[in-house]
Length: 200
Figure 1 (cartoon, one colour):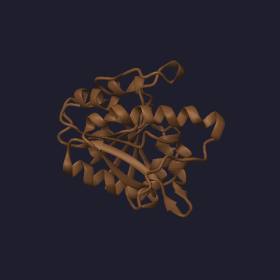
Figure 2 (spheres, rainbow, N blue to C red; figure 1 turned 135 degrees about the vertical axis):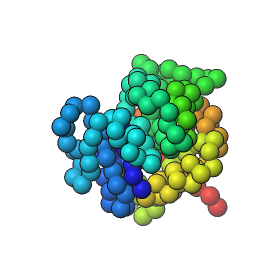
Figure 3 (cartoon, helix red, strand yellow; figure 1 turned 90 degrees about the vertical axis):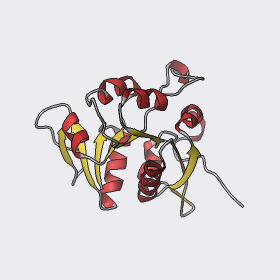
Figure 4 (cartoon, helix red, strand yellow; figure 1 turned 60 degrees about the horizontal axis):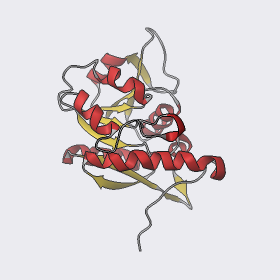
């Protein structure tokens, strides 16, 4: 699968490396002409070009840069857009809520995209190694599109997580506060913990 990573921070690098190991073709969208990918084996091109040439686009930029990024493309032509962002303000306050979410806002701005909220509820270290007790921990995802859900589920498994469908994209209103909860616990628990669904 052709994947465009928009954002080369910790999350973007962790996910890009995982998908390369799984056999996907990964290109990082970069703003500086001639810049190279920081992940060995991944390509690099301009942001708009990376989006246009990919089947799946992964948005791993700060939320404040999300609108500018998605509006680079006027028509997303049904491409799958995975939104990893979290609209969090000072003190982990919700910058969007409670009647909307960052995921829904991005969907309204990315015309024609099939938006999935995923990879936003835990830290990049868990994306580098999502195994606890030898088993992948939960990664929630939400979308209004059935075929996009199928693609997201496979990509989640390819990273090593256990996918858990949270429902329609409006469920991002709950997934984004879950990210704030995880972040708020790190001063006491460190980063090597995860929130998981356990079934009997």
